Length: 409
Ligand code: GLC
Image 1 (cartoon, helix red, strand yellow):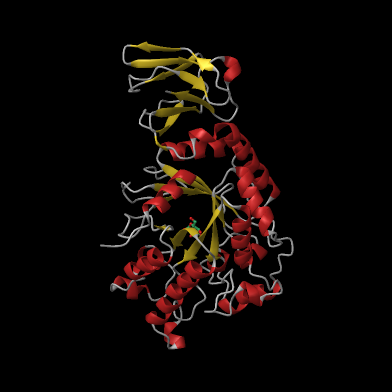
Image 2 (spheres, rainbow, N blue to C red):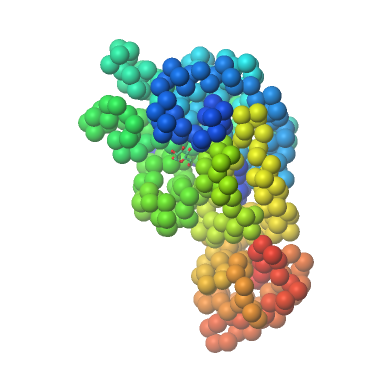
């Protein structure tokens, strides 16, 4: 039997409901997103020239953690190494790393310390399974290295991440897609080669018993994975085109961007409104999923001010509506055209996301419900059973611009 996260670790992760995703690396210097090396066909030797230019002097771990707290986020998942192969921490397994840049500091160690100082916010790590830089991943013929050498590196880095930074929220894997699109020897995988997940996940569950394992493979979860992830889509939807796995019984997480890019891309002005972000948080929670919302910091080490502002607006809504999100599970009252629901034991929260004229009409609400109030201020609302339908009157002045929440007991 594959090991799993501890029950308390899983409960913590589910209760947290809202996290900050951070895509940060050398690619920020170019500002075309984290796939730039591949998309613009930049040779390794040329891309490596970014490292001597990396000096994010404005980076301040306490400010990032304080922003996550202001946003109401309970955990931070940061790219320890993305597909470009550059490590954003002081790994002993490579010289291609942040401490060998003019910056010289280890931002991930600083974030871990800031999380510990702050309390209440856990750190987790994104780790890329593929590596466009590592000679044992990409250039085995030239380097004479073997796949086992790459596995040593990958598993060794995960061991470092699980050992050097205190208690983690999660290990978050990415980059295992059919035939790895970019792996020159995809034949290796076609012939059954693997990342040896069982060994990898067992190590994580042994070293970090409270950390969940998630693998963004867009496929059915494997043994040892604790959370099923969905990228740019709510569970069961596939607007992105690659969320083709069936929705499992596992707890879930939805990861999304604020504009359309993960890594820093100043030309991408397609920013979601804070109201939209609140809605995605509510819709995720109503589907039993965490909402992991991404920021792509600048090469100077700052979170884009517009994104910081939107995050704070979500946080302001959570100040008065957090009970409808944190610690909740998927709602059992079915959605209507205008509403979704979340639930904590016998308390139900109806999130009114669209305009309704007089109130809401719910179907299949538990017949034991006797009391309705606005979550924000406790104002009691008139309710009426009309046969099987529960009607709740929503006065004009009780409405919230972002999301009006009705608490039902
Ligand atoms: C995709 C992208 C990757 C990004 C990830 C985040 O898999 O390849 O760049 O990190 O989504 O979910």
